[in-house]
Image (cartoon, rainbow, N blue to C red):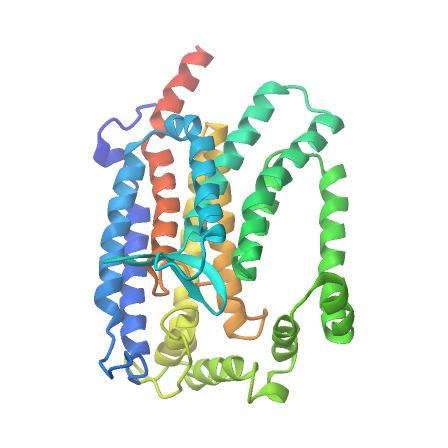
Length: 401
């Protein structure tokens, strides 16, 4: 079989085209979300987020080019340095005083670095990909060391997976960022499944986790006082559950955001009101609630097409993953698929009352430099795995001769 040798033949043009489509959707949606003129500085000057999003996309393309240049083996060698660097950033952010100009504190949470001339950067967005790289190396090395699988070795692998997840997850939760914490859980769950751990271990753990989740949900509804006294839950966290289950009973407070989101999407009906035809004001409609802008402008048809684009992206990433011969590359791609899938499901789900509201942006569409660069970094890894894939194909053919 003839394998592609030229760079243009090994470059994933389909994935690049998908990103271009998402870029155009993002720019149109952000532009339309600003039509009500609510985004202003204190001076009254209008903020146009579109040029900034274009700049972030350009930076993201540079990140992809740099990431794609390096081979998977290089990422494998530097995995612990990359993972440790991400942990260091989270630790610095946590221990630095919030009064410093370097730290951007919002709603009492220290989740951003403020870099003059650039803006606010959220390390947690990059830590997701760093975590995937570290986890992929650990799983790969475990299987290389324990070629014969037993219940004991699988349980040992599971302990190591949770140990690697614990540190970044703890820092994220100390930032009160439940949404990002759930992303780490989703990535971990996906890699546990594809790592080859026996179902005799996976089924009881996943069943226990599901039972715990349902129990906490019921306690948040019927025993809020118990959660506050025993586990230190905050009242606003329980209020999110109430407003999700019955937003109209909390229409003047926590439920208002969800109600306006439902009104905006519902008012778009089948074909929408057209570009910049927005009439319903939704807070953060250019960031976490960008899907409300899409639903109101382009209706059920437009929103469905956007969802189909995500299905196409995930299908293409899955296809790449199944073609890879290198276990490390496979685990990387599997983690990225889990990350993007969870983001899409949670973000769209929270705008239509399918899931509780969390601060999770819609990948490649929501406005935000950290989110977009973090996702472009992850996609850059996929480009790298696909671009350098021929190396593993040649080595596999030689081994079979």
